[in-house]
Structures are given as C-alpha cells and as structure tokens.
Amino acid sequence: MIKYILKCKNKHEFESWFLNSIEFEKLKKKKLIKCIYCKSQNIEKSIMSPKIVGSSKKELENLSSNKEFIKVKKDLIKIRKFVEKNFEYVGERFPQEVRNVYYDKRKNNNIYGTASNKEREELKDEGIELTSVPWIKDKEN
View 1 (cartoon, rainbow, N blue to C red):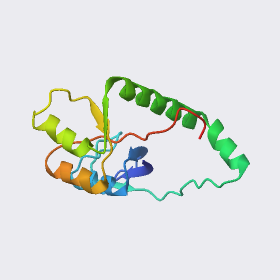
View 2 (cartoon, rainbow, N blue to C red):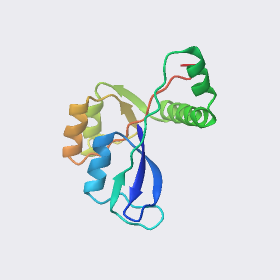
View 3 (tube, rainbow, N blue to C red):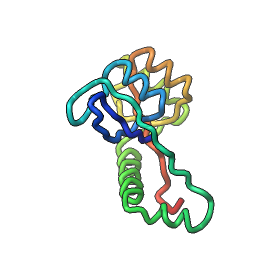
View 4 (cartoon, rainbow, N blue to C red):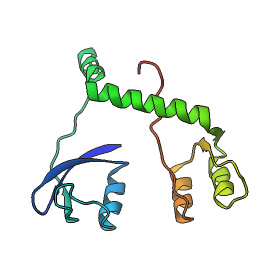
C-alpha cells in the first residue's frame, strides 16, 4: 500500500491510499478519483517525501509507538482473524478455486489463498475482482 497526497485543479489537497502507483494511474485514467472537496476529477499527485525507516532501534520504537500505525496494525489483525475463522484457506490453488466460485462450479465462495501477480492479472482479465490484504502476524514485527 502507498499513500499519496493528491491535489485537484482547484488546489485542494487530500490524502488517499492505493495498492501501488500503477493502481493510482489506472484509477486516474478511468476518472475514478475525485477531489473530496469539489468533486473535480482533474487530480495529480503532489510532491511528497517518503518516510524512510532505518534499522536503528530508536526509529523502530518511534514507528511502533505511532498511534496511527498501532490502529492500522490492530485492524489488520482483526481482518486476518475474521478471514481465518470464516474463510477456507486454499493456498496456491486459489486461482483455480476462485474460478470455480466465479463460474458457479462451487457453492462455497468464502475462500482465500495466494496468487502471483501474473495470476491476479489473468483473473482480472477474466472479470474476476480480487482484494489483497496485508497479512501481518499477531505478534511484534
């Protein structure tokens, strides 16, 4: 995931998260990104400096104590627990299993697993939409 500061033609600035820079460009091209203030679809990425986390103990402690980081981490852990409890793990068979669900060969559509970038693109080309969730451990990272 990547966070961009966006700016519309009216110079309103706002933040938004995207899967990656390619996803931002796709959504922009399809005019699916709108200014949260004026609804303008003429949006550009604003200049931003990335936050680089070094390996020093102090930097890692500062990141770990950041309230926003802690909340996001807790939310991702809740999502993971929900998925593990309510979905069937199909592992590397995921692309075939999701096709079975999509083409109605399988009734249980609560599945999760892994797919390569190429497999995700192939599924997308077939009209099958997927969601990726950052899979973090329920322990200190």
